[in-house]
Image 1 (tube, rainbow, N blue to C red):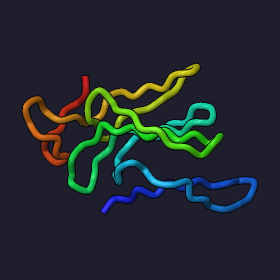
Image 2 (image 1 turned 45 degrees about the vertical axis):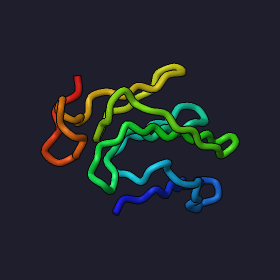
Image 3 (image 1 turned 120 degrees about the horizontal axis):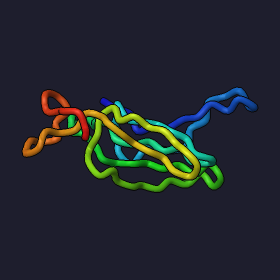
Image 4 (image 1 turned 180 degrees about the horizontal axis):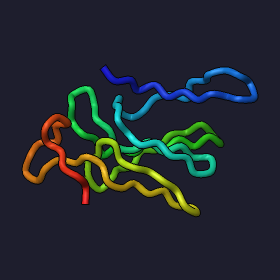
Length: 109
C-alpha cells in the first residue's frame, strides 16, 4: 500500500512536520522544488496504474493544487530553470494497452 502523506524536515526547528496529503496515494514519482513550491508528478498508485497527477504544494500559505501531465509516467526525470519546471522521459504505457505499471512500459518520447 502506497502512502499519501507528505512531510518536510524543518532544519531550523529540527523536526519533521506533516504538510498534508497527496491528491492520490502513489510511489515512483518525481519531486522538484521551485521557489516556494514543491511539485510531485507522475508515479504509480495502489491499483498498479501509472499516474499523470501533479500535486503542487505552496509553502507560503500551505495550500495544495493539482494538475495533470500530458501522459501517465512512472519515474519521470524532473528539473527546473528560471520560473519553469520540466518533466521528461519515464516509463509510460504502450499505445493501446492499459496503464498498468508491470509489463506495459516503454521509454517516453
